[in-house]
Length: 556
Image 1 (cartoon, rainbow, N blue to C red):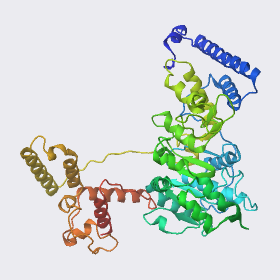
Image 2 (image 1 turned 60 degrees about the vertical axis):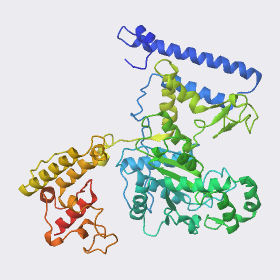
Image 3 (image 1 turned 30 degrees about the horizontal axis):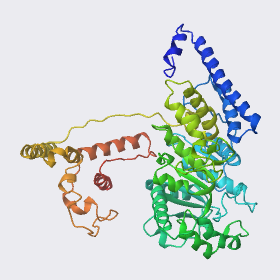
């Protein structure tokens, strides 16, 4: 039986059939909906129905249609059959499920949501799918002078044709290489906006198809500019921009925006380079970085403007519902992330509860509510004791995620991927005589040092570093004998193809010796080539210097 069912309702369903409980649950739902309908009818006798009341009616319809359906968020509720052919500038072939994404994402950008969440499992090619979407839309708009299908929400900033990709630092070069490798040579202009000197350069953002940056870069630039702008004598943002934008922003023949130096100067006084324009599209890679909509990184990202918004993540929901809200808030999905007034049609994405009255409608803060909190977050807090918790789960899966999220797994699309079965094998090898003696000596020295050290001494508290040293010795004695912290800094490389800081430049190569682990790896590589001469492998190690020793040994 469902653990979310309150105890009193479980008793009613104790006959084991479950049928009685289903009838009772639906009866309770009908009673709740009837109460809401009566309240709305009473209010609508005095005034016309408000926007949020109409959406509440849509919620009720969704509940009636899907109340008995499965609520497991891991089970996808979007079934796609339509596919789209890849754009001509994409040279990397797309699999069937990737073509389905392309068709779905193109429709999403035409819808009121203007984007969505791609939550495919890791390794299914979310990056190339996002690139395919950008190229496909560009191909569709080639004959049009309009940059996007939606008008700019703000006339304060110029619009550019480019797509802004925001990702962790580790993903910057991956995105750059994917764009270079998967697209026709010369068909795209890409800018990596990252590094200490980024703000010293002058950028014509309207010239780029892709601009790649990091979450940290956006947050740092936004925080710096905001702190400078929040000085005592600063004027409101709109007042500063109105003087220039009417006369200096215009579309050129190819659809790009001609932003004059004066506009750039005024905008840059207030916002960072990336916040000073409205992008055609923003793509958040690893979007779960926005765990909290109130953190500094999220605020900086949410301040960016674009016509379309996409979030890529394999884990949109990890621990708390607030994590998912941060992503939905980025998408600005209406009505899910808006604040509404109970007395009028006032709505806003951001609303300060500390104000004495609303800036739009002048009603008190208590008369306003956040859609997400009212229908999703708060009911789910009491899901074990309140039937409205199930209402929230129904709305979350069958209304919100059904409209916004596409999720596929490798298991689900195994036929498309044609991946070989994963086999995990453990190989156990014995160290040779010299290695055994070295490791035994190192262990005895370590124990002797620990015995001499006080119980509350720093050495006893730092067992992890001791264990790491012993692990290195098992990989190769050189990792202990030639610690990376030792040696001559900035020395010129003596081994061609290796950096100056490499461990190979700290040892006498004439004395180089292999290790049991390296020999075991060499043997496994030989077995791999015997099975398939065209096979490729990836060697991973916790210690980077060990990879240098492996490479040198294999080359030798």
